[in-house]
Image 1 (spheres, rainbow, N blue to C red):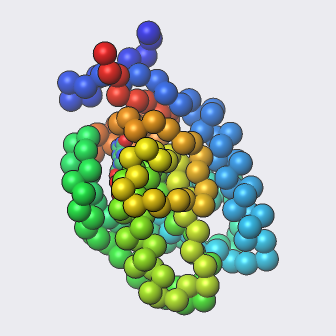
Image 2 (image 1 turned 120 degrees about the vertical axis):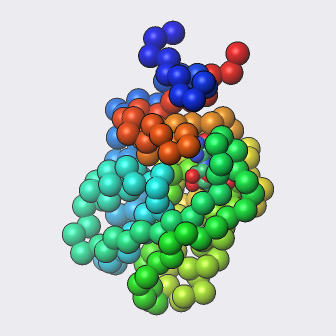
Length: 181
Ligand code: 5GP
């Protein structure tokens, strides 16, 4: 198979092309626009992994009055979740009465997502919605269900389009999956 990629001794194969990503970004952006008709959302991009998805999704949603902010959590080391979620950068904005749309790269165990939502809920927003590029329902340890999912996938390790392997390869336009032989 062509276009195999080796990173830190691991082999990855092409999984989702940027063209397919953009198609689903368009669909999800349409759903968000429809659900939040007449409201002014606050988009909260979860760094670092969601930066590319958020940039495409927010532009596609084309809601000029929307605000955009950023948070940062960490749970992964290498290719596995540590099971512990650390807040590295919180939301420095009053969200009371606002319609918050969290934008995440991937929901794996669901620990980060459920912690984040519980945390933000305490600050009395009007609503919280959760959009994710990728969802691995089979890895769930929390039963967390995102409101918007671009792609539902098997529990395999993914890189590209913002997702990293130890900080590398976030730049890739397409999504790659680890090759198991
Ligand atoms: P969770 O808390 O749901 O287990 O994990 C969420 C975070 O783990 C994601 O935001 C992402 O940073 C990281 N993560 C989970 N699965 C993958 C994956 O397949 N590839 C990469 N690069 N990161 C992942």
